[in-house]
Each structure stands twice: as structure tokens, then as C-alpha cells.
Figure 1 (spheres, rainbow, N blue to C red):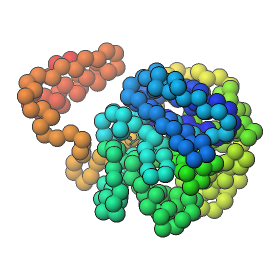
Figure 2 (cartoon, rainbow, N blue to C red; figure 1 turned 180 degrees about the vertical axis):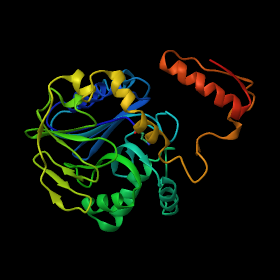
Figure 3 (cartoon, helix red, strand yellow; figure 1 turned 90 degrees about the vertical axis):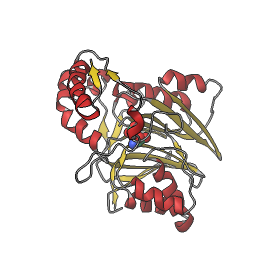
Length: 322
Ligand code: GLU
């Protein structure tokens, strides 16, 4: 589960989104993308691998003036790390980024396919943007459609959605994955952690689980899970990036030790049923023709690989060395 950024304002949106994503690189990722909406036109760029690849694709993109945009670094949970699976995900008139896992995506996907929606990716995320557009057809108003979409999602998410049906607005929701809003006068930002916002604004709103709403250049509309309006609480951003990345811990190692139980539950979310673990992206034929597995790792990952090698040998009956 990786990183999200968002921006509304008149400043250099491309640099702000890409700069924000590079501040989230420390969280790890396999692909990245941005989508910018200016008046009625979407510009969208995605790339697999390092952010440098995304930067290189955007060299001829120079948006000027007011615009809204969203960006994402992906750590694949459902579907391979490919450009099609990278976020933002597209509907007919909307783009969306998501961190987390939608546990009931398969049921939603079947219903949406039956309604005639086409899926381009293997991700769980793509259901959200099609579900929004399906609701919009019926409800006509983007806020109502966004809420109706949230009502059907199970799992963990931080999402940002931009749509031509409200071209000056970013819709947001947080449930399990981190997200905060940065306020800098008539410029507003979203990020998954403090670091992308340090230097851009000093006041932030840390979102709590269940909170959702929408943002324009002049206002933040925040609601609780029952869609009752709540007053945002402004906090002051810390000024040191390094300590912000350590999220209150003294050392990165200490932080990683305390994060272990969260990482394990995030990794398994949406993959467990009564008695099995599901890896629907992998099929039995994956190991056809393979007679030896070698794992290459160092430090902590070397120790994980040692433990994994026993499991590989036990379950696949293929020799495994580290
Ligand atoms: N589950 C989503 C995916 O696989 C989001 C992963 C993330 O949080 O980066 O695309």
C-alpha cells in the first residue's frame, strides 16, 4: 500500500504532484502515475519502475493556470506491476487513485461487467471508478454518486477521485489507509504522509477512518461515515522531513519493528477466506518447467528468504536455495 498525492490550485501542478510522489518514494513502489484535469481536458501519464520513468514521459507536459490533479505510487496487491495496472484508473469521465485493498471487488466487478462496463486492469481498484460512474448515471450528482459508491466498498482505502462532472473538485475518502489534507490559502493538497507537504503548507487536517468529503480551491467539506458535516481540525505540520518519515519513532528500524503486525494484516487483507489464502494472479502452471528456485537477498530479506525457502520446498517440492 503505497502513496497518494493531490493538488488544487494555480501553481505548477506537474512539479507539485511529481515532487510529492518523490517524497513518498521511501514507502516503496513498483509503478506511478498522475492525472491532471484542466477545464474539460484530462492529461494522464503512467510508468512502471522508478519515478524517473514517469518524469521522462511528462517532459512535454506544461500545464499553466488553475487545475486539479491526483498522483499515485503503487505497490501492487492485485494484478502485476504493469502500466495498465498503475493508477490513476480511468472511467468514462473520471480518474481515481486508491491505496489499500477492496475486499469485495470481485462481486462488484461481476455486477459492473453485467451492466456493460469494460475493465482494462487486473486491479481491485478499478471497480471504484466504474461503480462511481454507474451511480452517477442514476443519481446525476457527483457527490451523491460518490457516497453511494463508498457505501458499497468493503476493505481498506484512501481514495481521490476527479471527474469532468465537477471539474473544480476533488472527492476524497479514508478508511484504513492514511491520508491528510494540506491547506495553503487558495491552494490545497492531499498526501499519504506529512513529508510531501513540508515546505508547501503549514496547516493540515489529518483524516480519520470513515471521513470523506470534497475539496475545492476555496473550501474543504468534511463529513463523517454517516455523511454528517464535521468541522475540520487544523494542526501544524512538523518542519523536519526526516523525523516526519520516522513517524515519531527514533530510528527507522524501531518503526519497522512496530509496523510488523500492521504490515502482515495489510498483506493478507482480501486474500483470506475460511481455510485458504487466495493468490488469484498465480496459477498452478507458474512452476511448470521450473526445477530449481534461487532466492537472492541480503540482511533482513536474506533471513526472510531462508524461512521462505523451507516453505517453497515443502509446498512446491522444488529445490530452493538462498
Ligand atoms: N490494491 C491496489 C492495487 O493493487 C492499490 C495498491 C496500493 O495501495 O498501492 O492496485
